[in-house]
Amino acid sequence: MIALYEKGERRVAVVEEARRWQQAGIVTAEQAAAVAERYRPELVRVNVFIRILLALFTTVGVVALVALPATMFDVKEVGLTVLCLFFAPLCAWVADCALIAGRRLYRCGAEEALLLLAVGMLALAVAIPAHSWGHSAERLAWLAAHGIVLAGAVLVTVRYGYALAAFGAMLALAGLPFHLADILHLQQPRLSRLVLLLLLGAAAIWAQLRLTGRKTLARGYIWSLETVRLAAWAGIYLDVNLFAHRLLWRQWLGWTPGEWQLPWSDPLCAVLTAILPVAALAMGIGRRDRPLLWFGIVSAILSIVTLKYYLHLGYLAEELTAAGLSLTGLAVGLLRWMRAGPKRCRGAFTAEPLLEPRLYGLNAEALAAIQPLTPAARVQQDGFQPGGGSFGGGGASGGY
Image (cartoon, rainbow, N blue to C red; front, side):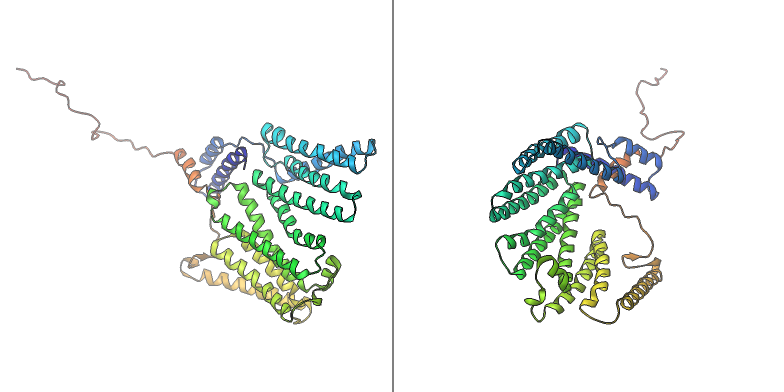
């Protein structure tokens, strides 16, 4: 990650942790204000709504700038290629030098949109001229454009730590096996799905291993790794769960899973649809990992909704009502069980809300920043103080 973002993120994280500690009553408002003043970020930040608006306005502006000369000069494929080749490095330079290094913007939406547009226009510059080269050349050109999008999204993620770029990289990675199968005329959907599962599984394992050392990572990298891990989990879950939607697969890919499926494929998918949410919940609870907990909860709800494709226990409304009542009863029972324990807790679990400091590995730095600002107690001491003076030989002399 660029040094400007890494330094700014550490300052932002210290200030946010001090504010959380103030809300929990650990430090005073004066101490939190002093920390915020000392660790004031040197970057310009905006809220999420302005960030979205700036990204939309930047996208519309760049597209208009590209479309204006294309309309005025009535350019065709070659002209659009030249325009994309001209605007792609221009957008990247404006985002990196003028906005980030010059204006010191920090994830304001404008620089993110410019970088993503640069990657997209570079991919279009490769794919557009192949339109008149023939069907085979065009397919290979779009495959090359696919690879450029994947490589560009990874590069933007590594350099700037943008979680949105990481999500785009995962989408490009998930679509790569099917694109390759289409280019190579491999009419074997089973092979494409197997390659997809292997790619997503490798990405999830790699992100999980990298997150074990989150104390040494910048916050942008942590967000990106969380995005990669959750996108991989979600892709694996959807690939397993959507296996039962015969009409959906037929509409998207032109084939039906029933044409090649093994006799035990439906029971296996049903078991995996139930195991994946349980595994995510178990890992989230065991490692106190909130993103995995949320994924486990959402995927468990989806599994309950889609269970009727595998096990027909009744009407969907009846199944959802019974499942909702069961989960509500389970939650109430767990809360009562924890409150009935000694000190209103059972082991390491409690029903009471606790402070959960999350400084992404900067707890020690925040403590070091706050500790010197704590007012030290001063005790007024009267009378003799040991070690406060010394008896000198010349202070009093004998009267002989």
